Image 1 (cartoon, rainbow, N blue to C red):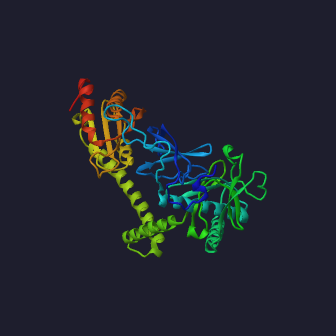
Image 2: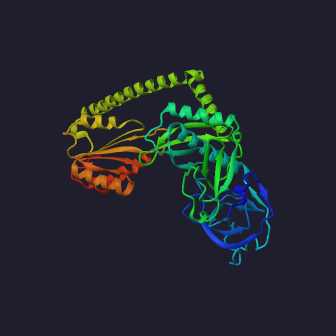
Image 3: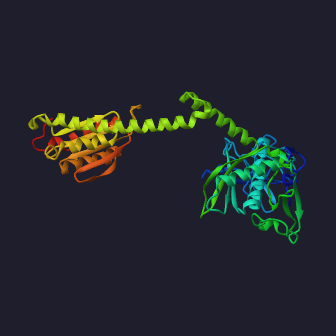
Length: 434
């Protein structure tokens, strides 16, 4: 059975199809693992497209009831209406939204439908041109929310190839080439390109063929524009690695081109304002900024190493018998180079019989920043303190060569970690000094 949406993809509403069945059902919506309760409604015919052929289903309304999903079941479409409330106050089931024989007004979300038509017809056109000019076979495609991609049987697709494909597909759009839907008997498909197998449920009757005049003939169940002029334009966005040596060719078509261009212009204005330059100078200015940041970061790291060394030298000038058993050093911001420089400069003499806790925050702009810590000193002390940090403060790390290097989720809790270490075991060690 060919659905009304496949006969006339431009119908936005329809009210002359009766309800054939209404049954309780539940499905997972929007990729959720949780099942949503509702009703499965089957009509004599429908303008709602059921998901298939790489194209998502339509959404819309039956009278005032929102249709959130449509799936194919054999030759018929099943429209799902979710319950707003699973049970009545008295515990009974929510009554069915319709009864058999009702003729609810079908109304699709036209903005979404037309967008899907543009992307799907755009995919057919790109696929046909890529095959004709470069022998690039399409193996699958994905219609995404913001952009779509076609997976092609090639390890890579060059920029030059994409430029030629993009120029040719937009040339066909300007020529306003017709897109025709015809029906063929299964034994009359010799001149038709098969992008995928015809579904088992549809093999017994005529096969739907979507033809772009003088460009492509392809079996397809989806909704399409009637003329390539309705695509407005196609922009190829680039490539990405696909499955098993294949390449994804990403694109936008129709209204998505204007949306993509609008976002690009907005980003360009923001960047030129931030960098105080013209659009033509964005690339050299970003390159200059990156080099400056790299140089400053290198200088900063060296300064932190020097600071760690100076902190260690300051400590080394203190008489050893005046140093406490537990020594802590915290920096609000920094790199691990500060910690490693401090520990290496301390040497082994001060580590014996003591415990050092040194920390830095990864982000000094917030009070509850994640950070890094190191415990060093007497191996027994380090192991006991590391157990407390891991088990009570969710630190991640391990003890190696009498040192524990780890991450903590919230450096603001370090005073509590210090107190836990002191009270748990350090105050009980011989010759403990504050």
